[in-house]
Image (cartoon, rainbow, N blue to C red; front, side, top):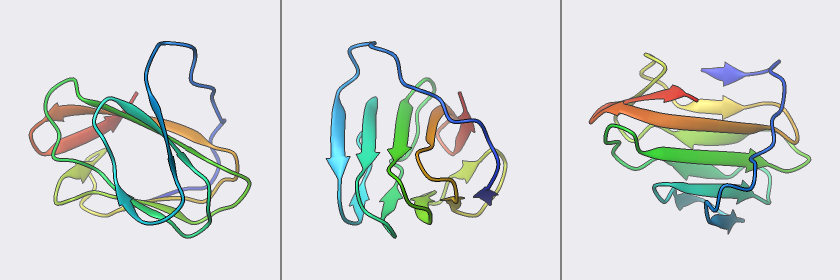
Length: 101
C-alpha cells in the first residue's frame, strides 16, 4: 500500500509525546514519531483497540510503516509514505488491525 496524494495534517497540541526517528525502529504506542531521515522503516506494535500511533515524515519520500503481521486499512502489506512533509495517524481496531484516524 502506498500514500501518494493525500493532504498533510498537523498534530495539534494534545500532550502526546514525540519521538524523533532517524533509523529503522519500532513505534511506541500512543506516541507521535517524527521521521528525520529518508528510507526509514518504522514498525508498528501489535495493536489493541484504541491504541494510536502518529507518524510525520520530513522533506523526503519512501518512509515505510511496517505492519508487524497486522493489517493496515484491510491490507496485508506495509504502508509506504511517498509524500514529503506528510503526517498520518493510525488507530488499532482489534489485536490485528490498524485504520487511519
